[in-house]
Length: 194
Length: 385
Image 1 (tube, each protein chain N blue to C red):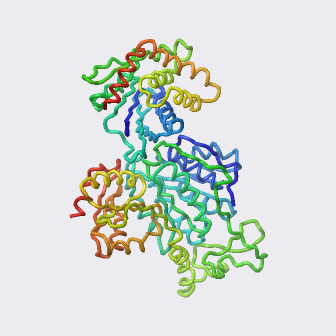
Image 2 (cartoon, one colour; image 1 turned 30 degrees about the vertical axis):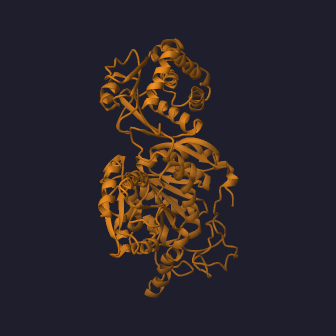
Image 3 (cartoon, helix red, strand yellow; image 1 turned 60 degrees about the vertical axis):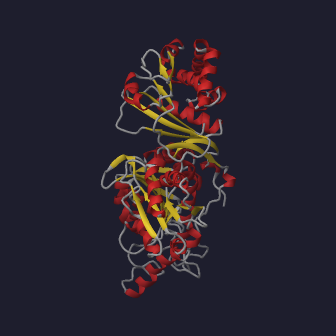
């Protein structure tokens, strides 16, 4: 795996950019890889479509933009509609299960998590994206769970670490409960075969 | 001397190029910023204005870019390391006072996070089309220094270099980021303060009465006296003698202006920073800077698969131009290939220095994105024929 391209999309306010920052931090600072994040920069306002992209590589990222993401993280139906076609034919889709109803191509793996419901159950819907990051960590293993967890701890506002780590752990637990070891092995095998 | 720990956020961070540039400035000892917000540069001053109160720095949001540059020149004359931050349209407005800074020999740094132009152009998208303006934007003859980082890490490291060079040569240094590097987030390692070397203002030790603000003794750069230190002197944008007073004559112009050029040109070898790869035996040498240097390496990798011998020069220093090195190489290679996010600016300098001894191939991009690496590959393949 020399170059992995990721797109994260959702609506403004969902923490799309922070999610990209956490993944980048986990890979680059904690994981010793190269990770370049670009946030889409346009006249977007809160509530409208928002997107961040990341390129993760073992060597310096020479081309900073993504072309066809290997991993597509979607937190809104709008974002899915906008970017669904660019995803790689054998890419991995990670989505908010209640907001996005994907129609994947054959060969694309799909993992859904009710991250909004999980966050609501913790009393703060704002941590939806962090639950998503826990789930993302478990699905992709791009960075280890511990590297991702530490990146969350170091990226959220001081004083909110406990709540955010709870959300992260809940996202991880959802994966383990719903997809389990067998499914994980299958994903890893598919990734290794690429 | 070593950096003031108050301005150094040591550790490994995940930062964009703009934030890293701001951190570099604070580590270098910058304690005054006068600026007017403009995309895609605003994050630099957002970062600094938040952190400045912790280290005694002052940020003033000025009424416009003319005033911003004037404030920076004024602040520097108090001995405070000073900087302004802008993008193309603001850079244009700063040109008159950049010339004033050059003429008065004022150490300062001007950050331009380049976007697509001309005019208001592409506010949120990348360009590299201000590089000639960085050299020639103000009127009259003068020389200054311009640097171009390729990553957030370099946005940090080279901002410190920019401040150091501005102190050594007493010139405004143009720090030419591009939007892509400015808005790109990567790992940035900030060393401890004791590992960061900074150049302090070279203050005169002469007592008032014996000090001449523009007298040079063997050195091509005069000593400095701060406003408020008890020295009574005059400084002006008019052609001046060593006392700093206006003298309207061709003789004084020759002495005053020639030295502004000589102090940079005579020290060009010390100032110029290049990164070279695989130059020996190369048929084609690719020259690039900023984000394009990274994308160009991808084009080189693709072209190398076709068996072409390709060298690479990354210009870290844009001005003064690495004239000597290009002349040396011109007789030994087939062609220079110059991709840049403009319709052909630095390629003109390469062509001038190549002097017809090597072909020069421009690989333009109008802005709003970076080159497709395939286009650079094709240009290399074409140049090698």
